[in-house]
Amino acid sequence: MPYGASAVVALLAGLLVALGAAPAQAGAGYRYWSFWERESGAKSWTYATQGPSVARPGDGETIGFRFAVSEDSANAVQPRGTADFGTICAGTPAKGGDKRVAVVIDFGTAADASGGDTPKRTRTHCARVDDGATAGEALAAVAKPLRYNSAALLCAIAGYPSSGCGERTGKNGAEPDTGAAGDGADKSAGRSDDGGPSAGLIGGIAAVVVLGAAAVWQARRRRV
Image (tube, rainbow, N blue to C red):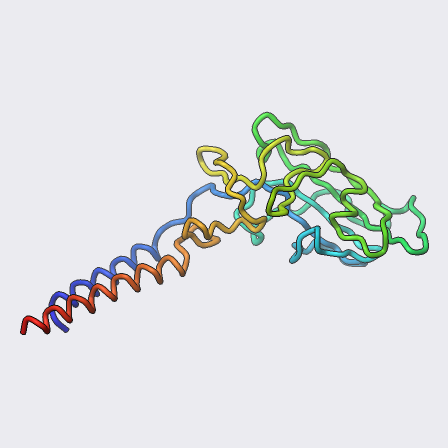
């Protein structure tokens, strides 16, 4: 391979190594309401794979919401407190055509609170709603007012927090609202879920450098 092309390829290798070794931003995450589910008879929470406006819990199931700062769904913290359907809905009898859904709302800790807000105490409710109701409708039946942003991200439950919606946080505190999804991914900035460079960013740089190497090689051939 001609020297010029070799030099460019070497530059590519160096860039890939440097990007691959880039550390995640320490302390970074998103402040948001995570959504959890617990099927009837289950002993633990499962991070929901659908948003509350889409998920439809069945009669006898429990849904939970936890406000906290998390990098993504892999390290999101679960709702605390009682989550047993039988305990939460003990005083709510079944009714034909309706379903009962236990709702756990954990407002988080002071460390996760937005500036000026004080977390409320964890609450539990038994929502009796139409049989086809979504988790969001069950939540609205017991914890108004709810606040959503234009991307349908759940921003506030029972008016908490008073402002903000899924904002990114770091060592220097909260940054402006990015409209990020609840899983905390920051792909718009070319970064992966763990804070390192995304595959798309690395692939784009690789393509540019390889094209540069080809141009150098063609230019040297024409001069020979």
